Amino acid sequence: MALHRSRPSARRAALPAVVVAAALLATAGLGAATVGAASAAVATWTPSAAITDAPGAAASFAAPNDVRYTRSGALLVADFARNGVLRRETDGTWSVVAPFGTDDRSMWNPSALAETDDGRLVVAEAGRRPTSGGPGTIAVLDGHDVERRFPAPADRAVSELAVDGARLVAAVPGTGSLWETDMTAQAPVWRAVDGPWVDPAGVAVSPDGSVWTVTDGTTDVVWRLDRTTGVATSLGTVQDDQGRVRLRGVALLADGSVVVVDNGGGRVFVLQDRGWAVAFAGAQDGSTLVNPTGVSVGPGDRIAVADYNRQRVVEAARVATVTPAPDPQPTPD
Image (tube, rainbow, N blue to C red; front, side):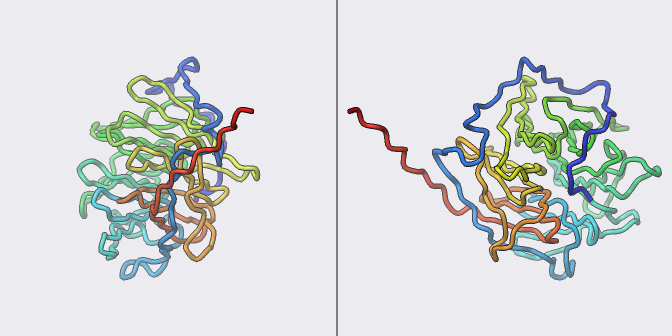
């Protein structure tokens, strides 16, 4: 399982793909860094579904660790401890993409999902370790065909995968780095992507691949990395008075706004115009999220989150964007 924040290990790749110099860091103003800051336009979400099973495919979820909306709008669920990888079509029909198990066609502890540009599915299998005590495996599913050509970056569970053309990007808590590899290479090799983060827990790639958004599971800072210039910009620290925040998955809305999962406090935050705001923190019945992990954005900015310790997936629909009235200005005496 990958529920709690781990400290970075000492092992680092010697040749990082990107080095962000401290002098190049552009940090957002403090007003943009705190929960509850004033916002010119506020989007709201309402929880609309709490999914605990997949009718016809799974009687119940055991440990949903990641979710992913495909380009067609289907919802994928990676169940870490049972069921494997499941798929819900837009008409609500469920199917098994790959069952849970140890045989060649099954997924062994699937921890993270991504979709390639040509529609193939990439799955991190934490349980399938070719060598005892070594890293898990990255599987590529193309219809009924499963290809396993290279291991995961480290001997820890991958928490999030993202695809940037032929490049596969992975966040592996406890390693202290992002990781990237060329999936088209004959023998893909992982390279560390260094930056101002301490221990990346989530990564999302913009549609054109020019921007990577990274959540730091140790400092709870969100970073925006421009891949062209190598400049990393802080989007602020997601924090509250209780100190419960522990960032995990990240996703992007249609307009590029950032959505992050708070694994410690059981909330989903969205970066509004001038600050972080809670999008939702539970299901439509009022029950709270408990150690949510993965997050994805689908059609109409619908948000799905893997509610790990509630053994369910919660979806929330975007319902409105409200522009608050401006603060009254003082009048001269």
